[in-house]
Each structure stands twice: as C-alpha cells, then as structure tokens.
Length: 63
Image (cartoon, rainbow, N blue to C red):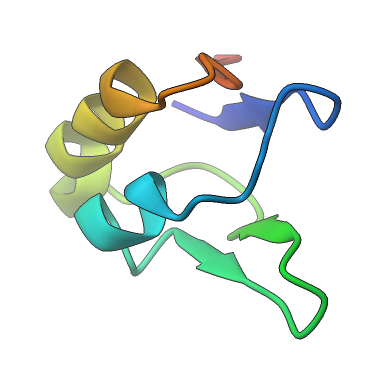
C-alpha cells in the first residue's frame, strides 16, 4: 500500500498525523509530508483510518 495526497485539497490540518504519526508529518512550512515507499505492514490499519478521516478527502491509496 502506498499513499498519495491531493495537494490542492490538503489543508494540513494534521488529522492524519494524529492517527498515523509514523507515516504522516508536517514540515516547517506546515506542508504534509508522507514517508516514502510502501506503508509498513504494522501501519496499514492506522493509515487506512487516516485516509478515511481526512476532512478534505485529500488522501488516497495508490497501490
């Protein structure tokens, strides 16, 4: 599983960071950062929850 983000929709409100902090983060400019590569197996459930909880539907599963 890999994650993508619609940068135009993302407001960087950090809901995803709160649900899956090992995969999502905000940089110094308050832009969303997603850990590169495939989501680790132990994070799949958390990341799936974060995708569903995104208030702007800006996150999506790419593979």
